[in-house]
Image 1: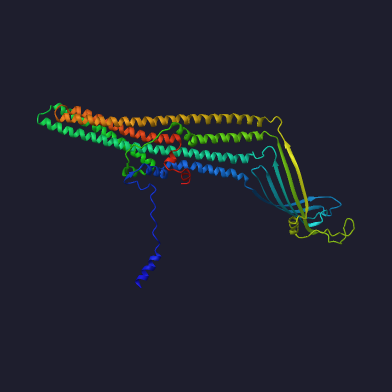
Image 2: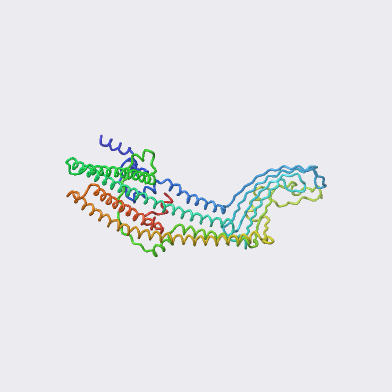
Length: 527
């Protein structure tokens, strides 16, 4: 029995939800080993500037929908009641005052289509109560429905303002997406630069600490040798100066490392004030990876993938649309107009059929008009009322047409200017790729030279330390060689940093950085 009770209680307890990962990726408040890919992932999730930039395409999408709203049908309705009293003197009007009460109900639908065709349809129902002897029905009901279409044959055919606004808003949205892609590329390249700056600054700090430790050990050895009378006091002083110099270098290196740490942390996590002090990011050391450089291939890739080029081409497309619209607006207006309407009438005869007409004395005929108010609407449905239609056209052109003619000229100039700007962007992209390719080759050669220098300096220092052990050298000379090795190690670290940044720089220049890093634009637009 107790097992059944426990099982029942377990069924009543809701299952525990899987803990959602924290927004900062779990890096705040602790020491975290951070890879470059992880740094980029956190940036895409948390970077505040990216969150702001992401709203640009969203707003542009709303503008497109706003422009498309020009084709939404417009429904309307209207109600009115009027009472009129008109003094009148007529042999056909018995009462001296004409009294009329009229109720009017109107509803309709209208709009335009991308082709430029405009349409409207109106329904109206009126009820009239009148003491006029000229009106045989009291109350009198009239129902009317009429439709009209207007099709432009020249001006505004397809190239009308509403349709052009939709096309231009779509292009603006595409430009906004390209601008976001450019921002994303720049941000990713910036994250990589900050990441390798932190990795390099940490490596330089380790070199500075190692150099300081070497100088301290050498100072201790020199003091011992001075105490036993092997060396002069001046050598101790030189060793102390070497330690002090390396302490300054170590302090400066640690400060630069903390600055690089704060900059990277701000980019990837946007922490609160406490987060900067309680978080420690541990990046990977910059390493060599094989990367081939083919300048012609890189330029071809850039021509296909650079966001600036895509945006510039969209601007040319937009200018072409504006020119086409201006040329259309220069045409005369020639509209085809067609309409169709149906009228229906119902009401109660004032004088019953067969009674005497007070004016003629003749019997009143049966007019055959249905009395009910809905009869008029029924006639509309069955098209048994009075039907009418019309087909026609309207032609108009401003004399001189200077506004439209000069607007075309202006748009032609603007299109030429936009095409020239596209050519300028293409030239800039080519130069950018060539510069990035040169930087890549230079970084590769510099890295190889820095490695050779480090190896040579290690051998030189090892030989000088052996000479010091044999008494053929001085601590000051050894410290100089040690400083040369530290400089070589710093140079190698800097060369590795430049090399990794050069890879990102060439990918950025080609416009392929997002693809290479596995970043999908559509995913970032909807994140």
